[in-house]
Image (cartoon, rainbow, N blue to C red; front, side, top):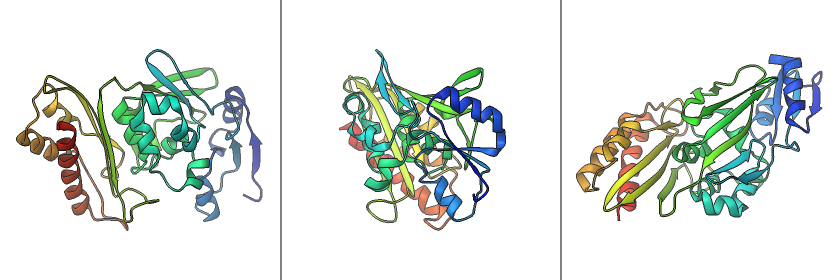
Length: 282
C-alpha cells in the first residue's frame, strides 16, 4: 500500500464515479475489519482505496413494510436501533453475536455481505428475513434477492464498478417466531462452525411460512429449501421435525478446515435444526 491512492467518498455519486474511473484497481473500505487484516498480512494490495465509512450510506429507515439499511451502517447502530429491535429482532439478535464490541463499532452490514464469507452471520438473518440487496453503479442500479447474491467463498454477483448501496428488509410479521443459534470453538467472539436462523409464522397449529438459513456449512450461506417445503402448511410433530432436520443436513456441503470437520458440521446442523424447530413448535 506504500504506492496506493486513497480517496474519501461522501456520497453514492462519488463512489460510483471513483469506481467507474479506477475499475478493478479500486477497493472499497468501510470498517476494514476484514480488508485491513488482509492488507496488513500482505494477502492483498489494492492500488486504490475508497473510504466510505463516513458516507451517506450509514442509516436505518423504514417504509410501511420494510426497513432500509445503508451498506455502511455499523453493527452497533443496528443492535441499538429501536426500529430494528421492533421490526427485525432476528437481525438484532444475530448481529449482536458478531465479534467483540470493538468489531461491532466499526464493522458494517454491507462489508459483511460483500466479503461473502460462508460464515457471515448477518447473512443468515437476512436470508431468513427475505432481504433484497440494492446494487448500484454509474448510470445503473439493480435489486438482487439475497439468496442470489452469493456465488461462492469470497465471491458475489457484484461486477466491476458496482457496490451495495442498501439492504431492503421485510419487517417481521406480528407474532412470528424466530431463533438464531451459532456454534463456535468458544462461547463468544468466535466465527461460526455452524449457524442456523429460523423465522416462522404459525396459525392453528400449522406453519404457514418458514425460512431456515444455514451458515458455515456450504460454499455460501444457504436456505434449506427442501426442509422448508417439508414443514410449510403442516402440523408440527416429532416426525416432521426429524424429516426437516435431515433435509437441512442434506442441503449442506461442508468442508474440513481448522475450525471443524465436515462430518461434525453435518451432525451439528441436524441437531441444531431439530432442537430449534422443536423450540419454535412449543
